[in-house]
Image 1 (tube, rainbow, N blue to C red):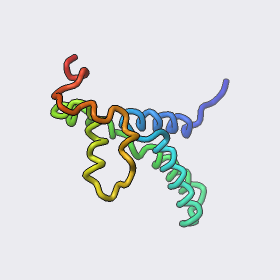
Image 2 (tube, rainbow, N blue to C red; image 1 turned 30 degrees about the vertical axis):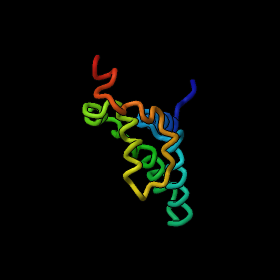
Image 3 (spheres, one colour; image 1 turned 135 degrees about the vertical axis):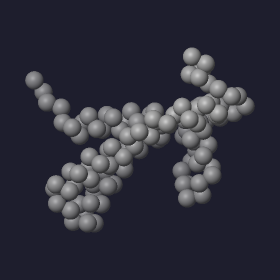
Image 4 (cartoon, helix red, strand yellow; image 1 turned 45 degrees about the vertical axis):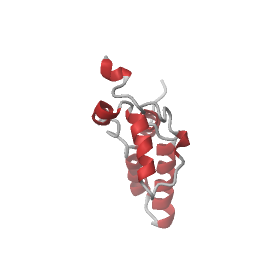
Amino acid sequence: METIRVAEILAAFSLTTDMAAGMAVEKGLRAWVMATVFARDALGAGADTCRTVHETALLRSVGCTSYAPEPAAPFGDEVAFRCALKHLDPADRAPTDRCPGRGTAEGRRGSHAQRL
């Protein structure tokens, strides 16, 4: 029987969270690599600390989709709403064209999920 490492479960969970939050594909995994390399190379962290950074980075977005009903109630599509908020953050230069469903909530109050 094959064993599954905790890191594999966390990576899959991270991908799912990225998709649910409308983030770019593998955003969480890129943050994990950057955090782990930074801890190891720039800070000179040991193996135990790097493992903690590794797992913490993969869990950083846990709960980010838990408040989806709050923006969905007044704005409809919460993913499109979060993507639209990028326009209001001058520090975030990421293009918003990658946002799935961008503009789908414009001009309407309530989504299919709300009507169920």
